[in-house]
Length: 132
Image (cartoon, one colour):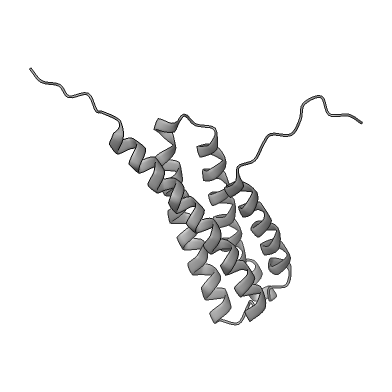
């Protein structure tokens, strides 16, 4: 079987987040049953929300990216919080928590830098003033 079209090019942020999500899926399978469908589902939903925001932002014109990137930052912060909660209640062991946290921190730095660059570009763009 041959592909008619090459697969879409992924951004570095999206690729890194997908790698981290794959790590999470392995951890999720090991969660205790009592947590798998509560905090486990919450963390999984936040992962997919961040993936969606970053994916959408990648394909928007620069002037429309900032709200999606800011949404990704907020969801990523919530994701890290709930991951920490899962670790604190001993649903995730130290090693898995550290691996996920380090990966998410890296993604967070990347998304934060993207947001800052978009804000700087927005500030440089002259706005039209209406003077009558």
